[in-house]
Image (cartoon, rainbow, N blue to C red; front, top):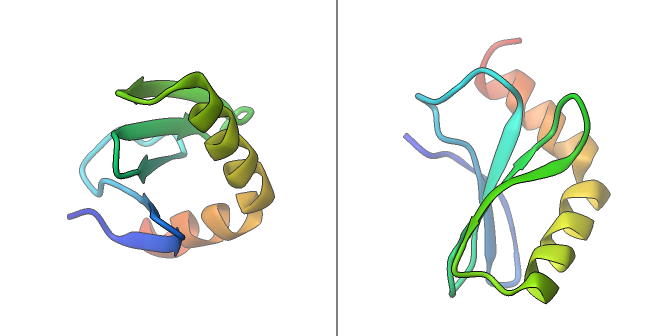
Length: 79
């Protein structure tokens, strides 16, 4: 199960329900996917088929929406 948290343009922010417990978010783009850790600090965990400029933009979006991502994590994972 991969519930969508929100979309921004062509970017889908989502969780994988059966994955590690450390807070993180995945972002699907038309070109590939990225994973960002939310804890202990926001950081790129992995990226596939994405150019550095897009990774930087996604990092900025994760930071702008950090509170929304954290809240969605708490609701989805009952924390």
